Length: 253
Image (tube, rainbow, N blue to C red; front, side, top):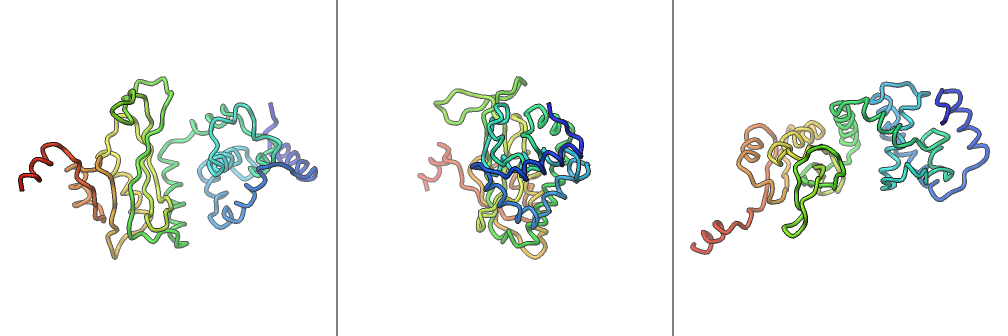
């Protein structure tokens, strides 16, 4: 158990700084300049709805830094402690999984999307996105959820497993992510992609041109093409799937 009032947090962090930090994760401090440039702290405060001295924005910053280090599943063992990582988050300890889940459970998906749009617009203003060619990049992540979920196969020979669906839009020239959505296992590409591209259009503030969007064969659906043609400022390029009927028609030409 750790005291989480503002005075206790500040006192313990100051003491850790006085004791000097030594470890293999102090490199995370190099992100401070980028945090200041992007206004990360203000974004996290707005998302949590808490003041600077509260613990919630600091736990949120821990999540940001865990993502930067590509670390998953290590909070329970507290393997990140005593290496300078916790102090970079403004905490004298590494927040537990239960604390992180409690924070996430207290906020709706719409709140996270609003912050994502704000960050994206800021990055657009800083010139991070040329915005000429975009790529839709779906990822399906193995899930151990106890919920009833549609099971999917990664390939025809693999066993069907529960998977969480994530959909990213990347700027193909800068290779930077613009935005992403998280969908349930029952949501199809045709259902999820319009929302994703609508977020991208809001971030890029498209007026004078229509970016080209590249996608793979699973996006080859009439509903998706029609939605983009009539409602979104994009051009869509998708390869045709190699269906047997289509191959026969092409061979007969």
